[in-house]
Amino acid sequence: MKAEFWLERWRDGRTHFHQSRVTPLLQKYWPALALPQGSQVLVPLAGKSLDMLWLAEQGHRVLGVELSELAVEQFFDENRLQPQIRESAYGRHYTAGDVEIICGDIFKLDAALLSACVGVYDRAALIALPPDMRARYVEEIYGRLPAQARSLLITLEYDQEKMEGPPFSVAEEEVLRLYAPHSDAVAIDRRDILEKEPKFLERGLRALDTVVYRLQRKG
Image (cartoon, rainbow, N blue to C red; front, side, top):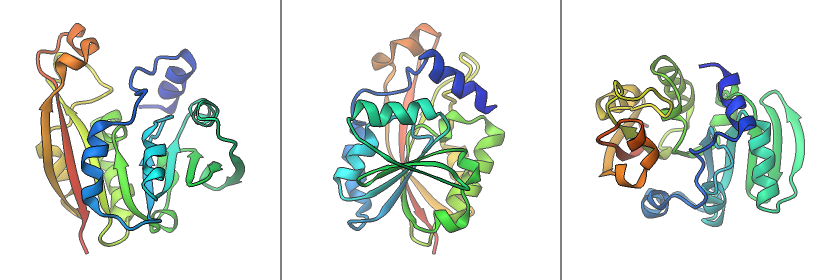
């Protein structure tokens, strides 16, 4: 999947995946990770998610990564934040308080940067990627986290034959297989959300589950 696909969706305003509230499942399950105050948390394919503000309010240093500069600018404008801007090999960094967003390619992050991320919150990254890119993403991002890093992953499961992604369906068996080389993944919540997602019902789905995983980096 090419970068232009996502850039065009932001330009055209086709961003139904953006939520105008903090994700309830994040609020419910994040505290159980018990990350220390001041921990740096990576939010891949962050968009302009309000979840980043919530994570910062919990005492974390948030590092979002987003391809669309329009999405990044909208995040700071809509939340009335004035960012400091700088350039690096990773992209353009926008920073305001405890929230920093790199406008750049998630696959350009390296071990030097990721070694400081002791947590990851992934609601929109894994399910945004087709199968071949998912394997690369998990290995290059989660495989470079420091020992004992803890993360929260939220996925979707549905009949992929009835609807093309993104967002893609990622079965529990695939999640366990992808993360097994370096992380323990445990499903901690599963619920049917089709009634709350009429757009998916209109596209022919008869079942739609969201699944929450707790990830623990192996020492």
